[in-house]
Image: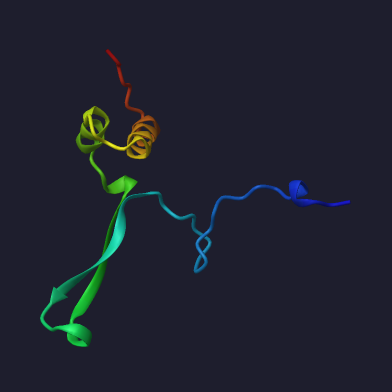
Length: 89
């Protein structure tokens, strides 16, 4: 009998397309780009994915004493993905 474990695992897919969802560095947020107030304001959704973050910023995140463990893990994972060799002292 077929069960949940018999299904092949698939990456999380975006509902609107067949592409996988990128891992985010910062949360998405709306920014009022131009004139207006309330309904008249033109807003744009801004975000930063892991691919947009520089190596220097990722390394700085790893070295910060008050960075959250989840952010450190994300930074380390991205640096390994990019092929950066880290030497820990």
